[in-house]
Length: 380
Image 1: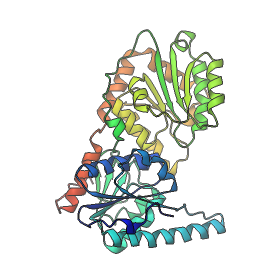
Image 2: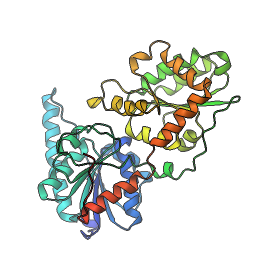
Image 3: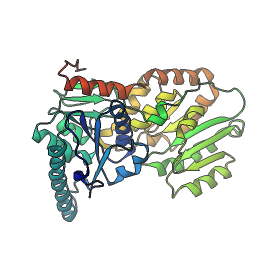
Image 4: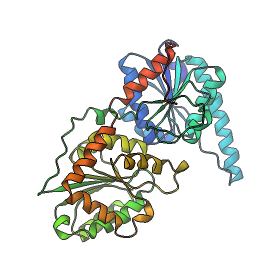
């Protein structure tokens, strides 16, 4: 159940932090960034995630302790899985309590996702300080449950929808180290030559992009299509057919399930089409590129639509609903950006102005101020 034997190393409780995050990129990427910040100042760091989180550990510091819990979301429709999920939840709470009592951290920081529930619950029950980070424009289920019980909630977007009485503070979303260390090229929209489009399907709903993006691109004028190079991140099962579809419509493409050099691809992009997950948005804003966001329909609390709307309202991106992609609307918006230099530059400039490249530093400062008993000026 757990990657490490806790008896192999016992930390001093002084300058020890426990960080817990759900096992998706939206939770693990900002957690990684904060881990590096505390690693720089010599803190002892313990990371707790679920089984999926182990896929992201290659970019974390090697000197941290990692625990992987097998926790699943509650399934009320299936009695067997409901009982099993309760069993895993109780097991996680007991073991999280054991780790907290063993290491006695100065503070616990949660990045959202159901795998964080056992650790946050145990920390509150045992009287440890807790700070949460919410990447989206509305609190997720776990963060919402604990919102009025924790010492502070750091927000990736502002405003963030939360229950009254929540202690909110805007920090932005921490960005991965390989992204934040990238030297950004100034955005320049070419009047001739190649036009580079980047498509990021995300971990959810990528199959829809594999269908609608080639269809929309195929309707562009030939003079535009022959200039396009497209970099499309898709589900591995879709990659082969997607590549063929781009070949059929005469588009140069690179299709992969994961781009290891995504920072270079973002930096060279003239247009990015993406879902509206918190981490994706934060990284794209950092590079300041024209952006079309297509939120996942029926996401929890409709958080992706809220994320995208905040950018759309500030003219930093076009927000297009899924049901608007079945006609020529997406094609029209792509064409507007690729043929209107002033529009592209405005979108780029507005996106860049919304970026928070020092979000991990701001989050670290909130944590340290809380530990030192310093007053924090909350947003609400």
